Amino acid sequence: MTKLQMRVRFDFMGKSKSGRLLWGSKNPEQLAEELRQHKASLIRNIPVQGIHIDDIDMSQDVYSIYDEITGKQICFAPVFITFTASSMEDAIRFTMKEEFRTVELIEPEEITLSRSEIEKLLLRISEELIDYRDYIEKKLDNWK
Image (cartoon, rainbow, N blue to C red; front, side, top):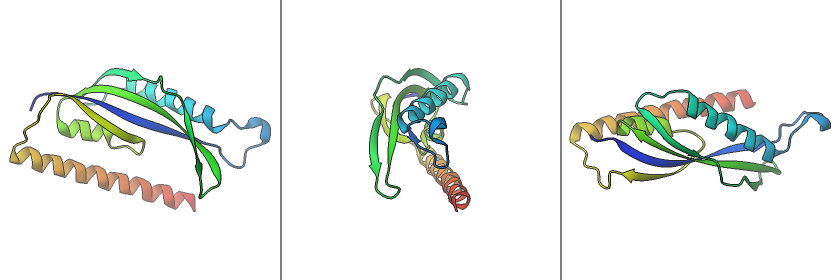
C-alpha cells in the first residue's frame, strides 16, 4: 500500500477544575489553549512509528459550549494536523483519540484494499476500540 497523507482535527477540551481557590484558577478558555499548545508540542516533538507530521495548524479560535450535565462552560481548542502515514493501521493508531473530530484523506485519491489488508485494518480498529474502552472505564472508576 502507498503512503497516506491525511488532515485530522483534534479538539482539546478545557474545563474549569472545581476545588480551586478563586485567585488560583484559570478560565476554561485559557486551559483549552494551554492544553492545545502542550499536545501540539508533544505531537511535533515525539516521534510516532509510521507517522510523519507535515504541518500543525493552531490558527482556529477557541470555542465554548454549555455543558447541561455539569452546568459549566466547556471550551475547545481545535488543531489541524496534516501527516503522512506509512499504512492505514498507523493512521488509525494515530487518530483514535478522544479529541478526534474529523479526517480528510488528501492522498491518494483512491484506495484499494486486499483481503488481508482489510483483515489487518479491522483488527487494528478492534484493538484501538478495546484500548479506548479500557481508558474510559479507568477514567470513570477514578471519577467516583
